[in-house]
Length: 302
Figure (tube, rainbow, N blue to C red):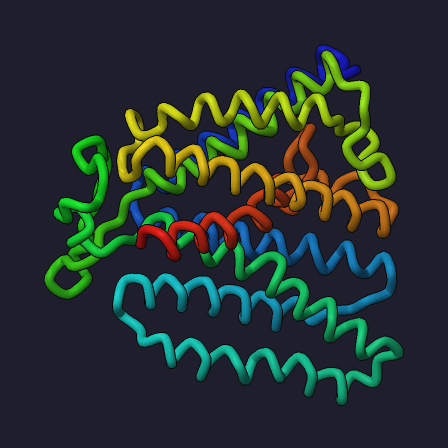
């Protein structure tokens, strides 16, 4: 059980973290971009420190350059200021530099260094880059009769530096995505602590229970049923299905991070966020949920 002091620290940290994650995107697209550039840098720093435990040395500078290039190129593509082809022209050489660099480093673990470097891009940077899909939209979507419940959209910022104002920045779907994960995590924890008896995956995460996971799932599904009233965009059925997809893969994201930490024999990825660990600890669910949440919307709605 958590002591009152630890519970207070966790609560304050969670509130501050939530205010940052919601407050900066509310200020507009530029604060959103700055926020996630910082998150990518911090996540990659944590990652490179962790893998040094097993004597794997990835080139942090090259990873950061590649990561920021991928995220910001994706942003420019979404607002129609960069063609998709340019992303590959810039990114492919950087990825192969990871291989070429190992030839000159004379490392004892070149394959490990290459593999863990590419893993960082796939596991951390790509999912965070996909969050651009949740905030940037064709302005025509907001005037499309088939785009459900647009009257409920309460925040939008037409990007004036985009030709003809054809792109709109709106963080509503991003906030809905956050909230589904946060609500699920919170109720899974509370129900699991109170009623959990059957371990969900004891070999990897001894504290997680089936009771907590199922209880959190049911509560979050019930809440997401009313999302069309608050966020608009989609009908109720879509919100419920989207929430179910997010929670399913968020669970695997959490378990994957636990698996990594068990392999490395560490409790937290860092101590950056008091009571919660590091960036990797806070974003483990997002890393897995974001790609599948995006795919569902891309295939059926966008």
